[in-house]
Amino acid sequence: MLMSYLENQVKNSIARGDQNPIGLFSRVVEISSDKNLSHGQFTLVDASGGDIDVTLPRPLNSSVVTVKKIDDTGNAVNVLTPNSETIDGQSSLSITSQYTSREIASDGDDYYIK
Image (cartoon, rainbow, N blue to C red; front, side, top):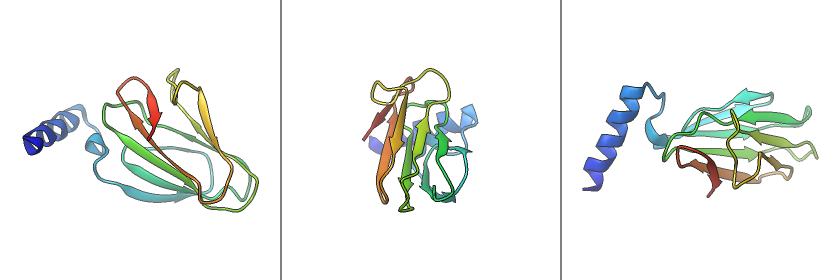
């Protein structure tokens, strides 16, 4: 039963043209400048050069994005939504401590920290 559910989710995601159906498969990406994120992406952010803004992808039900700050500076990693969505009811999220990560899931309308 679970397998047929997942198969249907993947088929629907592919039909919509999603790059990474329902966030099941993580890609590790390291960045040091502002970036638009993708579904299923695990992003390591080096903000040693200054604050970094990362923008979540459009919300899709069951998609997950993980953001982790890897530098030891006081610079912030600001997680933004692409439109007027919220993250746990807030318009954005800021990560300021080294090795702090946030796994963010979507219900298709908004985002929630796992």
